[in-house]
Image (cartoon, rainbow, N blue to C red; front, side):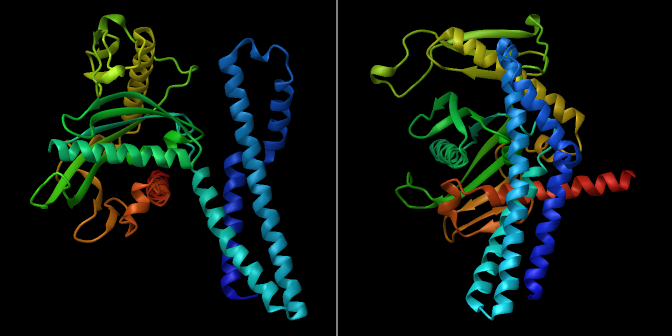
Length: 374
């Protein structure tokens, strides 16, 4: 067996070991049996929220077990094929099995990274907020491009996306938008996107075809689970209603249905502009609780979230990633130095390599900090 394949095999085995550690391999089967027994309980759905959480936790464990076993079995099968090919002198069989092991190494590494999403709220759904920076129409158009990018990324992962609120730009694009993105580890993956995003391109709105630089800020915070209690003192908030703005026509709102909640102690402001004022109050209050929960997480993990807290205004010196469309094609993350020339792919939602690089960097930094603490 070639040295390269031996190295890949060892790396896959290391990934499998990490997966076993993360799922608690010694007790995983016992916990699954307990989940299955509780699922059979006829009173389970008397508490729908608790039942949904149990079903989600059970499915996560099943997925982890199936992923581990599938990777292990595929590795074993292909190693046997290589031995068979070597014994029979069949180069085609060897080449096919080696190609499969190379692909398996990438898949195992991706699952290893996903297993590292073990933060307090990493498994939660998430809110994603986009705000255009200074620059008028240019920044508003860039905000709309970012919104499209994240929606496409979420859809590729099979996540559901709900638009919570949106403020249109004066001429084009959007001034701001908030989405709720639902799916396993949605917050864990997207949290690395918080910060300022910089675009460089030839402006389609400039008759002189000059190059423009635009900025937008992105903020990601987790949806609070129903079993997490966040107390909001009614005396600390102000609730305003207003008429939501839109593109006009038959769908323009004619009643003051949109809701804005301001939390005085922190200065946090959340909005929702669905059709029903009652629905908007509920959505905005949930968003406020999520923002307060994120604030508590940030305070608790100040060192880890330093970059997030220091993102500052959407402008020069604060960006986490640059998207350059002219005079050359490049997207570069300034935290990890990960880059690609496939700007179209990135703007179409191919963000996983950037998220994985940031996650790996954060895990590495956290491990070093823990080692120094020891």
